Image (cartoon, rainbow, N blue to C red; front, side, top):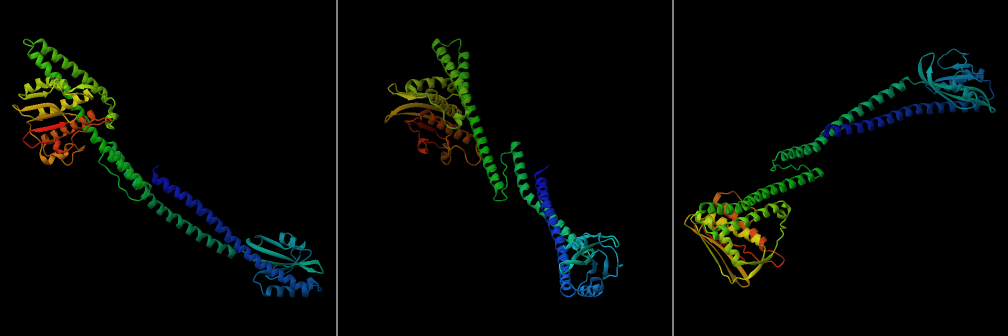
Length: 471
């Protein structure tokens, strides 16, 4: 059963029970009002008649004066008036009922003979209609000598009460109908928002993260729609970051594999003429890159660290000159295959620094890989390092395609705006941006050193050389 049916059903049950209780209360009240009003009128007339008898006829014989008393009592009353002796015999009746009838069987007469006021409501056996009778004792010198009885039919009263009952029932049904319509309308205002959220959630479950929920009202469901839209926006952002991460991981894993493959091809092609030194350098590089690839795979198992920018650095003393030359040897075979001149320049007097060798190697190899990717044959790439004001400055310079001046601002941004108008242009920007972020991680600790983050640190023009410097 849907929410709308449950809501409308709940409304109907509550309203129906409420209307029924109210109807019963009103019906009982109306019936009590009419009966009590008639009873009060009859009792007043009976009391007045008994007082009149006691004041003017107490010394007279009841049976002899019964006719005069009946005329006096019935003159101002529309009810049936009866004069009854103390023995229970009917002496006079205003409707001409047979005189001498024994009235002892009536409860109200019995109570009046005992000196109390008697009231009885029931069905008259002779006419088969409901009546209300009030009997009052007639006293003479504190002795009950007879009874005056006022009787009225309840037929017209019951017809009036039934008409009022019908009116109450009609009004109650109208109220239930109105509440039903209002309940359906109000439930739709709730279920429509829930239905939209449900449909949006289903579309999101199918992989459509561009969906948004419409906010109809400023209520709890509106807040839920806002929360849903915020969640969808975060999921879209995470999807974009995931795609960027996969792209970056693919690039990072491809680099050592490319280096390993390059040296394997070199060693195979020159196995007859290769020297032991070349073979040793190649195998060492292959071993090193294999270890680095293994470390990368291990780090991918802890994705949360990368996502939260909490990569742990393992800093140790590092000889920059030896490190730079090692990088040059590693990528020299690839540069030779592409007919690109790779020049490495690092003075042996460069100081030993505290750095994460693996991260720094990752940065430089990626930058050189980027330079090899975007440099045409017969071009050149320079990798050099020098000391400057207590800093070691490492520079990668190439004669590749370059980056337009208007695109320089995008290099260090996390998310690129707009569409990619040129795949090569944006590919290069993405590569440099990823490398800048990696360089920042490689050098940043509690005593952080900076990396240039504006266009002056990345001088480049379309069709000319590109230079990336960090320290």
